Length: 246
Image 1: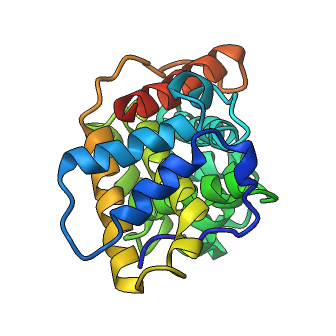
Image 2 (image 1 turned 180 degrees about the horizontal axis):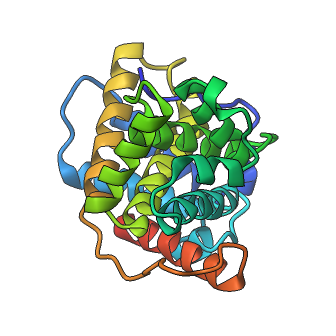
C-alpha cells in the first residue's frame, strides 16, 4: 500500500494529545475523499502529539523527531559531498565507505546509503527515519540502472533543486512514516484495509503537497555537516515542516 505498518509497543501514555489524534484518524477512516481542512486537522493533531513544532522539530519530544535529525544530517553530508566534488558519484560513495563500486548494483548503492545514513533501528522513530531514507533514495536514484546513471539523475536533481529542497522532502516522508507506524496496525483492526489505505494515502499526498510549497529559509551551502551549525539548520527545517501543519 506504500504505507508502513505500525508497531504495537508505542507507549501511548507518554505521548501528549494521543487520544485526540487517534480519534481524528479513526473518525476519518472510510472510503471518502477528505477535504483539505480535515487533513490539516489530522496533521495538526499529529504535531500536537509531538509537543508542538518547536519541541518536535528540535528533537525535544519523546514521541519522535530525534532519529530524523540525525539521519537528515547524514543525508545532507552525502549530497553536499556530491555537489562539492563536481557531481562525482564515485568519490561521494567512497567517502561513505563503499568500496568495489564497479561490482555494486544500484540497489547495493541504495542499501549501503540507507545503512550509512540511518544505521540500526531500535525504536519506532528509528524505523520511521530509516524508511523515509529508503523512500527518498529510491525516488532520487531508483530509476537508474548503473552507477553512471545514478550520477546523471543526481545531477539533474541538483540542477533544479537545492539541498534544502531534498531535506524538506525527507522530513515530509519521515512524518508520514512516523504517523503511519504509530497507527496503521491498530487502525486496521477496526477498519477495512481499503479504508485505512485510502486514509493514509490521502495523508501522504497532503503532506507531500504542503511541504513542496514551503518557503525556504535555510541555505545549506558550504557548511560542515558535523558542526553545530548543521545541527541547528536541520532542526530549523524539521521545525519549519511541522509548523506547516501546526
